[in-house]
Amino acid sequence: MAELQIDSILPDIEELIEHQQKGTLLNIMIDLHPADIEGILNRLKKEKRKYLFDLLPAELASEVLPELDSPVAEDVLEEAGDERLSSIIHEMDSDDAADIVAELPEDVQERVLDSLEDDVSDDVKELLVHDEDSAGGIMALEVLTMQETATIDETIEKIRELSDDIDHLYNVWVVDNKDNFVGSVSLKDLVLANGKAQLRSLMDSDVRTIHVRMDQEDVANFFKKYDLISAPVVDDQGKLVGRITIDDIVDVLEEEGSEDMARISGAPDEEIQEDSAFIISKARIPWLLVAFVGELIAAYILQQFNLEPSQQLIIAAFIPIVMAMGGASGQQASVTVVRGLAMGDIELHDTGTRLFKEFRVSLLNSTFFSILLFWIVYFWSGPLFAIILAGSMFIVINNATVLGALVPLFFKRLNIDPALAAAPLVSTSNDILGILIYLSITTFVLSVGL
Image 1: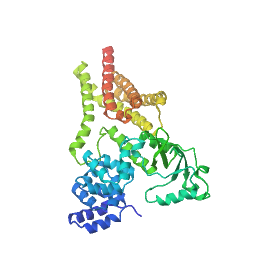
Image 2 (image 1 turned 180 degrees about the horizontal axis):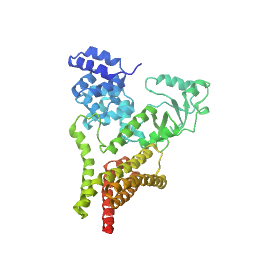
Image 3 (image 1 turned 90 degrees about the vertical axis):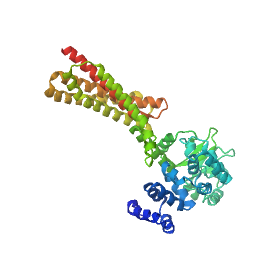
Image 4 (image 1 turned 30 degrees about the horizontal axis):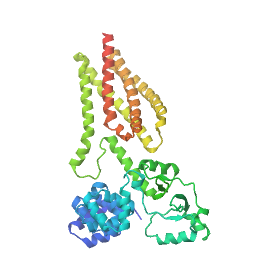
């Protein structure tokens, strides 16, 4: 089926909503994939998206809701009755249901959980205990487990019984009589085996498990490292408590990638689909304030150096290029390290090796641009300022590169998201140090020259 071109259908959807053509809209929505409905809801204004979502049957709404960004999900659930919420959540997998319930106000949470069937409510409550960014927060409780003494025929019959409750079935998890995880049997092996054979005779006991408290970013790297499509989640005692599948990991990668990009840009709490300018501004101001204060410090440092007016003009003319080269070099190193840490390609024990590598790179870059700037300024303003600018450029680039690589590693060691280091923090600190280095060299050379 070809990908839906939302732009081509959106005007018709909006017109149908304006004329409240419920039957026609419902017929169109039922034929669409949940991801396409999500794309349409993202493009609609608040009132129109609420109207359209309210038309969706509970089963379809339960498939669309997990796809929505938080601000859009809040819009479509606003003023939704407890009965409507309960009917939607009842159709969801446990992990998706827990995510939705966690976003509801506490009083609404209690009412919705009370209205759910006991088994569904218990599953959601169990998942809500875990940190949302941990393996326990993203795992699903719908797991097909069998005792190691169960036969192949018994297992296949169990699969038939639970076929409507478990999606994305890749393996049968095998446990002992104490519910401790002991191995896995693939569907391929299950189909090919003798029906009377016991699971323990063909299970793979060398299966890597994920601890329930493992951070979701580490879980994603775990899946990537071992090329997994599904993995069991166990507690401290080794008991099987849930499973994570590759579709969960795709969501984690998207979430972590978006979060890191937001932190790098200095807007870590901002949602793309957020409509409120106040909320967006509130997320950005603290990080802009860091940059603002940093530049004030840089301006104060600049004021402390007593230079003649003629010298001030030419020195000021080259401040942007020195600051820009330092900032760009620092950001390159910082983003590279942040990405390496996020992907698991760089570990904390690599700190010395990584810093040495970045220093070698900065030596080459700083040498190239220092020589280039020396000759440009030499023919522009003479040898004195050529020496000042070339020397400043060399030191600023090296300082910024090493700092850009070091700060994320330092943050990681403190268990703070290293993406924060690539935000205005690195940029601002490089500006402060850069202006200090530049003016210190300028003052020294001019005093010697005089």
